Image (cartoon, rainbow, N blue to C red):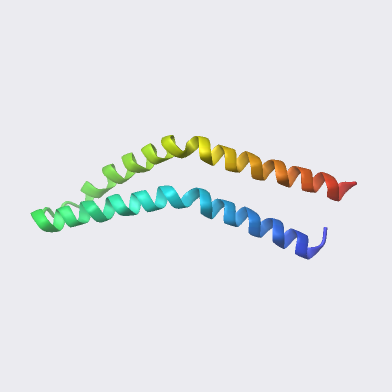
Length: 89
């Protein structure tokens, strides 16, 4: 396998990881920001207050977007296996 092929495959995998993880990270960040604003307005200085809503939001986002994520992942894996199969022949 040539270096450029390996680097291209690695780049594609890293881009896929970035695409699949971005929605969960963005939702968790927005929920954390909203909770922080709420804490600043109400002057509640509880450090653990942000964790539970972020975890719940992340899990809900994962549940909602899991079919899309699996479709993207399976499509990319199929492409990779087909490409490796053509490289072997």
